[in-house]
Image (cartoon, rainbow, N blue to C red):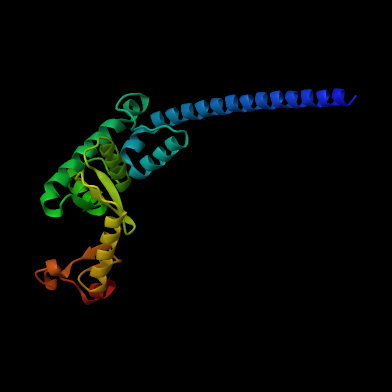
Length: 228
């Protein structure tokens, strides 16, 4: 009788395992269909809001995040539905070329390292006021695509922002720490000023590069806002 009981229990466990497997397969099928449905809706959304995605940087970031939730990368290829529908392939290719031009033009002065803020300002200036608006997020995405090409481009996190590297030199964590310490030292010794009241990101000023402070018409109020 015990053997029969054990046998019955084993059969019951096997049936439970089979039913569980079938349920998991059914869930996978449902999730797959939901994913396809979501992707279809995303394509419909992209088609309807193509102009907003291309023209508005904030809208473009939100759309990229929506794509990321289902593993779709509109920048992964220069061909296909996403790039043809949105023109994002051409947009980021053009932006990548402009980034390279700015970095090459300043390489003799900065050694191939430039802050993301300065790069953003110079790219905007080069594009002109009638060109499609570009955000720092767009720059970051374009630089990541340049990095894949293996031409020395990359980004180094420093003090809450980024340095954009356009030379094929390896900067490890030690170098990053040195850069951060150098920044702290310059501020502490008064060799650099931090303007935390500047529009947008905080700005750094190097008095040694001024011919004289009055050339900027700095007011006493502005001087007080700068942290030596």
